[in-house]
Amino acid sequence: MTAEVRTEVFTGPAALPLLTGLVEGACAAGVVTRERTDEWIAERHARAATDRLFLALPMFLAAATAPR
Image (cartoon, rainbow, N blue to C red; front, side):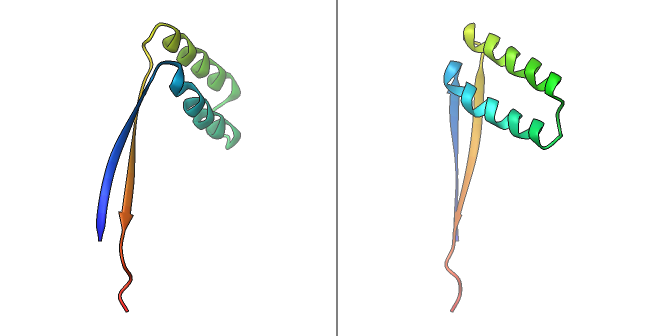
């Protein structure tokens, strides 16, 4: 078996679609209120506008061969 981890880094407005999608999913699932979701998104937009938005996204990949 092998396993790898890669961390993608997004800054500025490029991170907004990913972040917005994640929080909208949480809102749709009832985990976060619409009001809090809208506040959170507005804050991310403000951070992006002032070059203060940072997202580090670790991704894990594992591969193995099944025994025969």
